[in-house]
Length: 297
Image (cartoon, rainbow, N blue to C red; front, side):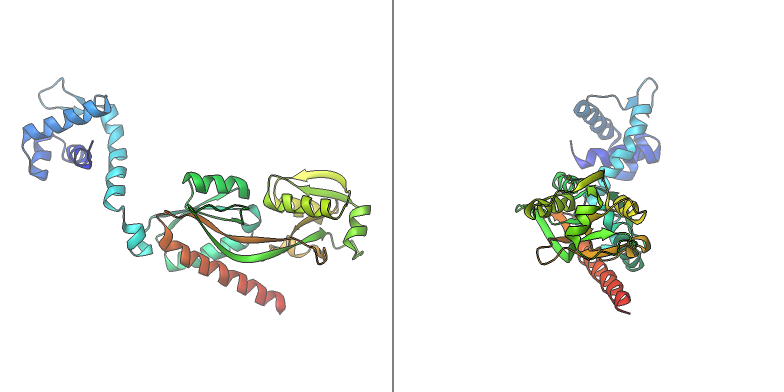
């Protein structure tokens, strides 16, 4: 099967007949018929109704044309994403850990689309392990996530910020010692399927702290909401670009042994959208710098 066969099929669809298509692509009427028979033989399906003198696309053929157009477009622009202007790239698919979706990513994307207004961005939320698998499988162009424990040669890791893990508590908690607080108050656990959840579990075990489990949450956003309502305390990152509800929580230091999570952008080394990653990374860093500047005011 060749791209030329797809282009011939598209010409027939657009021109309405074999003869008209032959005139447009400068081949004989007989050559058009031979090409379409070869395409049908390769696909092992019938794309045309040949019951009349002039073959017409059947329902399957009509449904196949948009797919053929997509293949031809991808073939014709196969190097554009790597060598061309980023403004010509149609879509960027980005995975993101939930903690980045409240502030960091929306503000960074707003900056990015100001530079590239025709860019379409698809955002897929997920925990870091799941995002890692999607990057490996090629279903995402990039992922804003916690640093993986192992990064093989087929992946690119672009770190941009370290967040210290802290004890999250409601403003009503006046105690400052995290060990005493964890002894007395219910503990809201972040799922161990997440990178932050695993880091918190390791810190608790290392310091021989037994907590009073109340519940386990799947996202930091929901965890912070439970903490804000006084249901207990949790261990989570001191988010670099917090939303207003997270900002109101107390962030109590875990001391010198506090773990840190590194946030960054993960991509495949052969990602076709590499031209967009530098500006995305730049906008993320600007967003963080703005947030830190506002915090210091």
